[in-house]
Length: 504
Ligand code: NAD
Image (cartoon, rainbow, N blue to C red):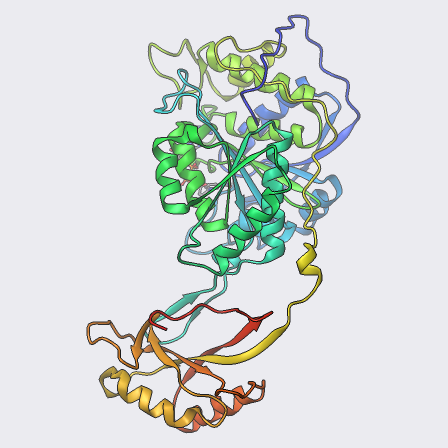
């Protein structure tokens, strides 16, 4: 999706390109889904007659028919068979029913890259940032979205943030491959590795390693907070941005919003074997069935699908006809502005207007010309040379987390009791509460919850053995302590594999 390439010539006597036959799965979804899908398929049929559609059911209708996850096995089978699915929005039932179909589909199909182009269509759609054209590449499976959460004490809840080397490698490589294939000049990585030195630090490090393989593409790293602020006020300084899951979720909404076109925004979810294309907006039940919904988000998602399939000619034709329709002031109600728009049209009439402009180029907005190429080559996770050799991993201690709510939560009482239980294998190095050191020599001002992290390194000159840990836990249990979790402390090739405690 790149609206900055060379203007395409206007070809009045336009005929659709004859491409090899290809079938894609299509799910209309809920709410406005069926009507916008209908409109989009009509445009696709006009521009790419050799594309066929295999209709599958996802969402409320599938749920009512007994598929409790909102889609049945035939959906997975169709997506696996065809490699791609164009999906309408789904209504997520509130207070019960199936979990988010989108999240379930992304996870089951291994769609690791979420791609969101955020483009301003000034002056035809209101924006503060004319010329904005940013693509957010969000990691789609890991991070806090692994969905591993636990309550550990009365007061403390935990969500596990998992970042893996293969996960970082494939998303970062995907971002650079995308930039290269789409003529983009710069990739910005955003993390919070000044705080999360291990997890976000790995993402940043992998970014630096992989960036070195793409010398023609500029690279930079920004801390996510200042990066998001810059996205809100100076989006023109960005081109492609790659970031872990949670940051990407927030950043892509900020970017789409400041582009002014969240209702027009498309997205792609890319996996190793298949891909799913869908509009960013939801099922808009408030306007369903009225023929007033804007089909543009789904239409631009379909354009991304065609590009992904290597069907560049119909992709360019539809995209340019759509830009021309926008320029001509033919607008659905959501973007219609009295005085600026010329004609207010419904969903199907908008699709007709795009079909009528196939072969035309926009005159003020920049036209697109997707280059001919093979179906998108997906970035595969590759074993990095250093990943081929497993690191020398040494157990050097253990962090034990206690649920402890006694002695008015006096850390000195706790610390002294633990000192007596640590040996002979371990010594107590420190106790922290919410990551802040409270023993030895804590500060009375530090807020103390009922959740204590107690660090036990192996005693000097003695290697820790795995069986030492249950022995320690047994001593703690016999003394009445409630150990709610442990984290082993390892070094990898001599490097610490755990964060230092504050004040350590
Ligand atoms: P929404 O995007 O459906 O609607 C927000 C507002 O934007 C509404 O006023 C709606 O009328 C309008 N709108 C949305 N799309 C439009 C379009 N194409 N043309 C014109 N106006 C449009 O968001 P919501 O109301 O928060 O969510 C409704 C349902 O959609 C919920 O069940 C939610 O879970 C689901 N949802 C699904 C997806 C998806 O399937 N990808 C994404 C977001 C929300």
